[in-house]
Image (cartoon, rainbow, N blue to C red; front, side, top):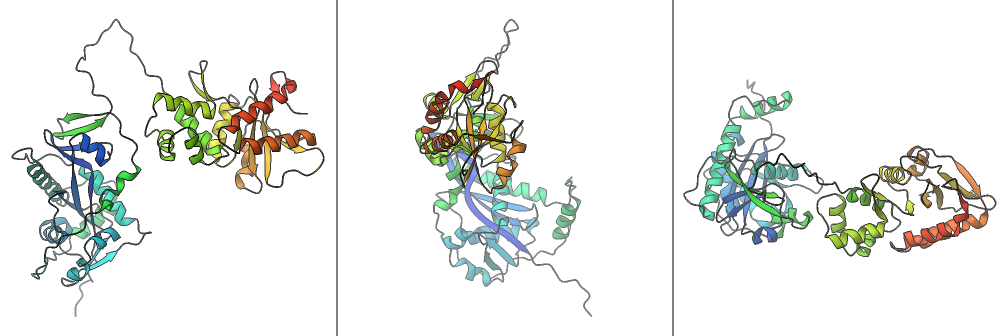
Length: 462
């Protein structure tokens, strides 16, 4: 009677990509990039891309990496067989090798060839996030590989060969039985169970080495990167690698002058304010960006603080969005007046706090004293002290509209106003929503029409 427990299905993830954080430089050898850089920008710095190949045990932090230059690509079969033969932590061949569709399309014969050695190739569908996660983890891990092997020279071939040896030594160390110090006991036990599996060495069936198609998918990660920024080379003594870091290279003059006060750089809060305003602007973000003379992606990079704008464009965007410098607060603030749309709770709450100076206002919903209200929108007046009025349009029936009393401090409920004034509010909001630049222009004219409603520095309608 056979009492042996059945072996679990073994699954590996296999991926190929241009390395996101590793390049080669003729003077520095392998260079690690802390913040990703576009290939064109890397080329201007004499950095050559490197191809990363990796195999990861599904669900476990056990991976095997190797590399090649772009001009001397490795056969996918060569990579797989070498890993299954030499990488102790992989425990030999899997039952299932999962890849993304690009790898499968790059080498159409791979599925049949692997079937000859009893390995089933499966293509991850679009909803499967495990293979992309394995690739991201491999990208991140690659930049922290310690330099254990010195290349015979700093040529591309010698540097990549030494990098491969570093990666293989890192795998051997991580696949050893030494304590890992992981805080996840379940994960530790999963690793131990995997490493207890017997080796499953590749069969002697030869697989013909075939070329594969290297298309733009290899560097798909660069499409979302912001524009290039200043960078400099820095040698790290601990990792023994040269890094390419963001910023200006520090001055060699490090002498301290005790007679001078340190100079602190003022934080520019424009991106945060712009991000919240754009989220509430009546027009699509793409139209706001075009009006400011930039692309939508540039606007997104700026508001997420991933990239800066040149001085002129920075000013144009502030002017368009009504962002002004407040000397009292030592920073920028939304001056308005605006027509805003309640879409995101966090954004509308943040803008209200800025406009009202922390809640110094008596906001209210405007409704006509006689006649029907707008069937699509509710109109909330922000009548902050010492500032022109701002109107928030809230779509009827939406959850965020019901939350407005909680998001807008000191909310005073519904205020009936004359039908003529209500019609002017609705018409003004419609005109202000036509173009990004019309917003402040129309609201400024609206405020001028009702200047007589300033009472004790607070703006109140009839």
